[in-house]
Image (cartoon, rainbow, N blue to C red):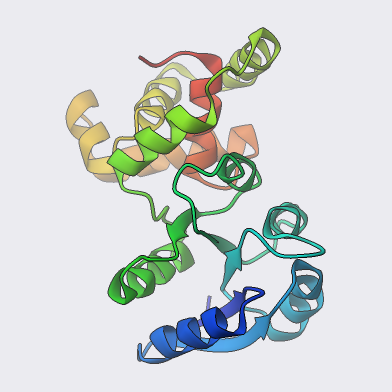
Length: 220
């Protein structure tokens, strides 16, 4: 990632794009390098502009943000994706997170929080607070079914005991500091275990890990 964070704004509403450009453009370390009004325009713009973060609307005509996110994050070298949604309980958020989006924002999020969220996603950190993570996971994974639970448990067998313990804490929506306190580990050690778990499971971020753990039914 470059020193300045390059952002691609994707939304079918020109007024929303203009507002986001104004918000992000006011931050000294953020550059809006491009805009798109459809998910279909994302791949060529990403290839041309090489953004660090794609700020992605979910609901667009043609190729929507969900499909665009899934296609984009299938590439190991893809930029981070921060999803925008107008609905906090939108069931489509599940697909976005499973596809590897770094988190989501509501469109009424205060400007300063949008800027902070873009910075965090650019650094590979989820933008969801532990409280929001717990709530979202509860909405997203309810009614997963036996097949998904069995498949998730089988995948988690790739982890060693300590990695599995840390993964379970991630599934509870706890931060690295909270996990460190609960398991009597240092924060750097927790980060190491989270990174190892993501690598072994072929996941992009801790939100996906939390969803997998909850699919497996190994947390309260």
